[in-house]
Structure formats: C-alpha cells, structure tokens
Image (cartoon, rainbow, N blue to C red; front, top):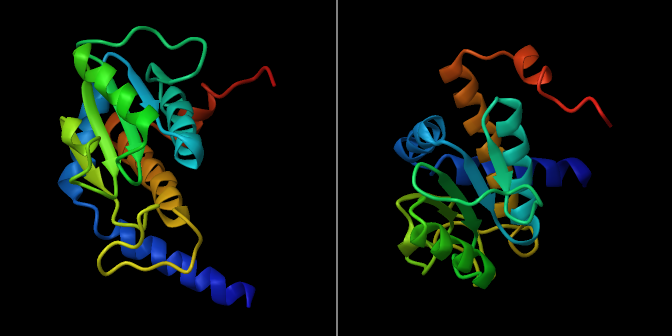
Length: 184
C-alpha cells in the first residue's frame, strides 16, 4: 500500500508542476536576480515552504528574508515580495501583499486561484493548479488531505527555481555549501 501511495502522490505532483507556465518561472528567476532583496511570506505549511525558499536563496548569496523573522528589513522599491496562498484569500497573506504594494515592492503571487484577491495584487503571478480549502481545481483531484498537494508542489517549485538560479549564476552545490550555517 505504501508504494501505491508513493506512485499516486508523485503522479499528482508531476501533473500540477507540468501545468506551470515556463515564462512565469523564468520571470520569477529574473525578478530574484534583479531584486535588491527578497522577502517571502505564506501562512501555515505554505509559510514553511516560503521559509525554506528564503533560506536557500541565502545559500545562493541573495539577501532574503521571511516575514516574521526578527531581521526582516523594511521593504520598498527594488525589492521583491514573494507571497504564496493556495486559496489566494488568506487574510494575513493578503495584508502583507497589500503592504508590499503600498511600499513599492514588486509582488509575485503564487496561488492555485488566479482570480483571487491576492492574485489581483500581483505584479507577476505563478499558478499551481492544485486543490485548495475551497475544493478541487477543474481537472485536478487529489487523494491527499486539505491543500497538501499545493504545499508539496510549492516546495518542489521553489527547489526548481533554485536550480534555475544556480544555472543562471553559474553556482555549484559546493558554492551553496560555503554559505550554509556552520554554527549549529
């Protein structure tokens, strides 16, 4: 039974990630490269994926933060705010996206719901077509509970963005390890 679930879950992840528009992924890579600094935000398990992404951007040598960390600087023109919400309706994520817009940051939104209120704030948008708290997406069902598929796809999407950034900046795994914490 375990391997049956492995096949089903990995198939679902592949199905969702194969619907991401490559231009949107490329645009995010270029936005990160141009940004003075990157701030990421999401709630719950989506927030954990955002935190991991910020950490990995730091390993790439980018100045990156996650909302809620004590060292997050003010955000403004020249900065990139990456917010993620499967539903696109999470109040705290909406509030952060709105503040980013008001302060002049470029706002990238990653969501399953391209018509959501958070998506409408986006300067750039990435759609991960996965079920949300509002139910399944058209043509995409999941055996997994709640928004697990979106959360998994977000983590893998972020890791693929890191691979694209490594290629773009000619960095190796060893380069990233030199910036990994050595005080823990």
